[in-house]
Image 1 (cartoon, rainbow, N blue to C red):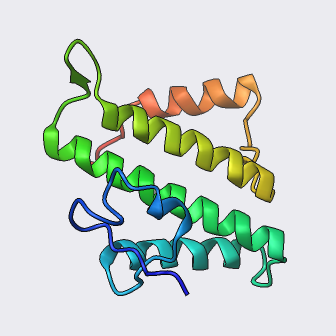
Image 2: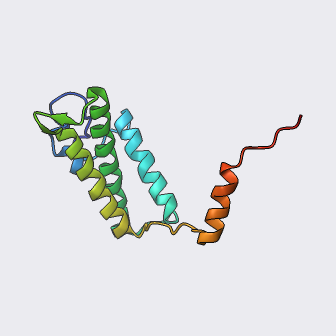
Length: 138
């Protein structure tokens, strides 16, 4: 059984390591717990009994979610999207992880849900009602 990955520190499992993409995560860490929670949520979403290919896709989507969270957290700590006249590498990592995650979720069959859109007359009536000041009792 391969070593479990903890992404604390710069060695095995650090942010530059490819271990996070393939090795088992140490589920005792916060990252491992987040990864496990993502997997459980995705399993529940598809009905709780994934096939082998679905399980692989769930694992991949959960890892990509963790990578996106790590990149976003790094950006928030630095409070910048730019570095040396271009986009910060963490922002690029975040965008890539979220795009890849979206592709995996689409492959898994998690499509965007259609939103009920009112017809134009109903929409305009709702907006007009929102603009009217509420009547106050005197």
